[in-house]
Each structure stands twice: as C-alpha cells, then as structure tokens.
Amino acid sequence: MDFYSDFGHLFAKLFHTQPLPGFVKEGAYEDSDTLRDLPDSAFADPISRAFPIHDRAHTWISAAYCYAQPQDKQAAAVLDRVEKQAELFGISNEMSGLRQHVASILTGTTEKMAGEEKVAAFEIALNTPTVASLRGSGKSAAQQAVDRFLGEWWKDVPCESRQKVAASLMEAAEGNGCDCPEDLRKFAGAAQHDTAIYCQQAALRASLIPDTFKSAAALKFLGEIVATADKVAALDSIDREHSLSKFYGGRILDPHRAVYSLIPKQAEPEIVIGTRSFPLASWEGRERRFFEGMVAALGEEKAASFLTKEGGLDLERLAGLPVEEANLLNQYLE
Image (cartoon, rainbow, N blue to C red):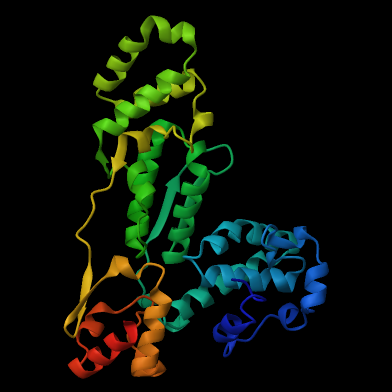
C-alpha cells in the first residue's frame, strides 16, 4: 500500500512525533481527481498507479512507505525506482535518515538505542561492470544487499565467484538479524543436492543444444555432466558455450539452483492455546482474521501486546494465555 491507498494512516503512525523536512510539509498533495489525472510515469508502480514519485515530497513519502513495508512485494519491487527518483530530485541524503527513523519505529527502538541493536558491518566484493561491492551495516542495509543480489545482480557475478559472494551475504544477513531466503542459501551452496532435479536440468540443457551436437553425443554428454564432481562448473560451462543463460528463470535453473536445489523442510511449527493446537501454516492468508479475533476477544491493547516488535505473533506469550481467555479466543476463531 502507498500513502493514498492507506489514507495516510501509516504515515501518521511513523511521523506523529518526528519533524518533517520542509519540502514535505510544503508539498502539494493530490485529491482523487488530480491523482487520476497524473500520467502512469508519475508512479513508481505505473501498472497499479501506486507510490507516486512526481515531485520531491511524494518521492520522500513513497520511500517511507517502502521502508516501512519490507515484506511487501509491491513495496520491495518499486524501492529501486523510488530511490533513483530521490537521487534525481537531489534528496538522496535525506533517505538515510528516513530509513533509520522508519527502522527505529518498526523495531520499537529510538535512535539512542541504535547502538544496542544487532549491527555488523560488511563489505563484499562483486567486481561486476556496474557494482564494485556491497557494503553497509545494520539490518536494513543487509536486507537491501540480499534483495538486490537476488533480484538482478547475481547474473553479473561470474559463476565461479557467485557462491563465495552469496556465502558472505548470508553471513552479513545473519550478523545483522536478517532472515536468509532459500535462494540465497542455494547460491551459497548451503542447500542439499537433489540428483533427480540435477539430472532433469542436464536433460533440459541437452534438449536445447543444436541437433548436430545432440545426435552424436547426447548420451555421452549427459553421462559426463551427471558424473562430474564440480557440477556447478559443468553446467556453467555448458550454459556459456551454448548461450543457455537466456533461459534462466523458466524451466532452466541457473547452475547453483540446479545443483543445490533442496531446502530440507523443518517440522511444522504449531502453538497450543488453551486446549487447542493451531498449526501456523493454516494461518497463511488468515493472519488478519486471527488478529481481529484476538482484538474482539481480548481488546485491542491486550491483543497488540501479543505482537513482536517485527509485527509477528509472540508464540510464547500466546501459549501462556489463561484458560478462560484462550477459550474465549477460540470461540471467536471458530
């Protein structure tokens, strides 16, 4: 969601005690008619016409909404464009302070407590034509580095360096309190090898190689790349020789994700409230209903006390509900 679809509620929460830059306070804000008249190019998401970036004030506010919703796919997708627009408007310096302020709100801390947060500086050499290195410190910087690497930058990193870069990113993410996405673990070689998936990927590559090659050596080709010790290098060599990287993102997986393809599943977490057990997977897509049930049963203030600083459910506190309150909550959830 952006400022207009949210009717400014999140903005008020983020900045009710924080002074705004002059250009934000003096900005001209749109009503529904003027918003409708703006061209698609005035939005960081032109398809949904969301996150307006047609002037400095709107760009700053759209950045605030992106920073405040790190798990939102739409906000993450437009962040680069918002930040580039901020650079064009000459307000890049304001972005760092804005990001820190929003992060302090999300984590329930103040700037004075920032030194107590989990912070680890990192600098990871990429040596690509466009990006020399990834550097920074803190959860926000680490998350942004991970997102950008997984978004596009991994393609520019030579295959032989990709695993080392991803492993360093995993270390930076964990050192700054970030979760490590499955794809990052695969690039880092921290996932398991699945022979069936690898053989399937080898066969798909063979099917895309010109017939003159396939007809003479297909079986030998498959046997060699399945038997080779360095499977990532073998697939990368084939992909470069036959220009198969253009098929990545479809049925053809890049070498690392083809070789390290399996993330072991952990036991399904669940929480017992009163006499009932709730598997967390069943809450997917229903978290809002669950929280609304908590508000109805326990009141908004008490329901909010069961949320973590990151906005998730505090399972230990929930499990400690008195039986009568747990039974009341269960009635609202049925």
